Length: 114
Image 1 (cartoon, rainbow, N blue to C red):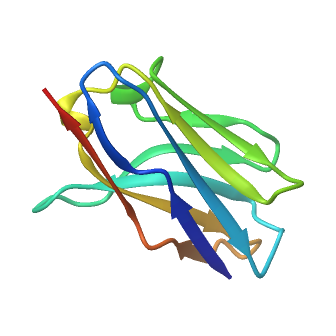
Image 2 (image 1 turned 180 degrees about the horizontal axis):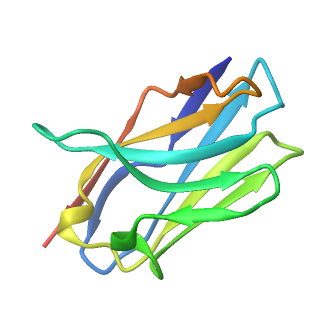
């Protein structure tokens, strides 16, 4: 399984970005999601979407971020709005197989300037 993330970049506070992750090698994932990490901190959950389309968000992004999954394209997207400086991080795509084995993408950097 390979996960290819794209869409990161530099944006001003208050702006929007859309991250996309393309999965190859499998279409059967019980869950897909996005995590983020900043230097010196552990990787943290941002948002996940299960195979029944139920979603879970970190409290810090609720109401600002929206996760979606396209089963035809085998992608998972993260629409980020009202971005804050503290959203700056490397964002990682994640997918879990039927056995809950996790797969990770290469990470995409999101920088929010003040």
